[in-house]
Length: 106
Image 1 (cartoon, helix red, strand yellow):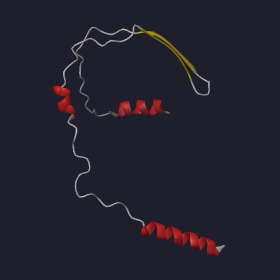
Image 2 (cartoon, one colour; image 1 turned 60 degrees about the horizontal axis):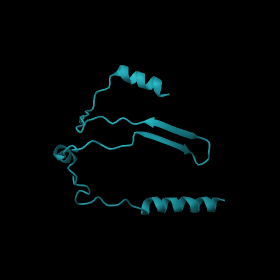
Image 3 (tube, helix red, strand yellow; image 1 turned 135 degrees about the vertical axis):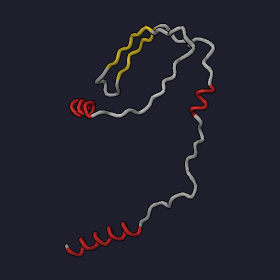
Image 4 (cartoon, rainbow, N blue to C red; image 1 turned 180 degrees about the vertical axis):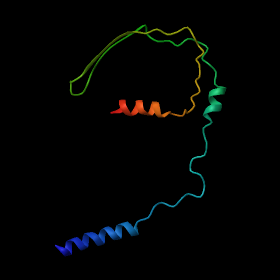
């Protein structure tokens, strides 16, 4: 029994001290290859209205047959080709809001 435990401990010891992490790369792995903000500012709005069907009717059944989703919706597309872009910035959360979140989280 003691011999088996000692083999396990020696194996764990060797695995933990003989294994190593991958070395840190010399140069940055991901350089800002995609200039998303620049592309958004340079992109143009579509010249024509989005084309979609007038209604959507579908029945979706889950694999086990436990849930059935029935969709019967009219689709309304606005007559706009320009869409607003929203800039989102982080905000400081006060202790009052934090208390609300904690109460309703559980």
